[in-house]
Length: 84
Image (cartoon, rainbow, N blue to C red; front, side):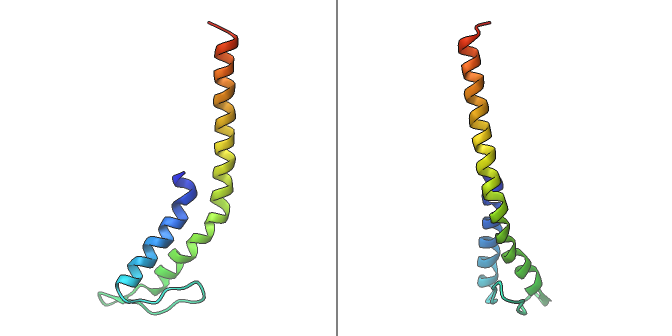
């Protein structure tokens, strides 16, 4: 589950952090964001765009969850049918 939502969490946390420092962050372009004398605009831009990886991680997580469910059902069925 963490694999599936990690990109979303990174995007949300970076967006709130940038907003807390009064910086504008969007996916359109980088904006200057001065924090403690350093420009963090490009870092926040990359972290916000990182949310698009959800397109990959969410379907992969669903496939892995289905595979795990099938594996556990087969293991339970084997133990019931073939006693040791």
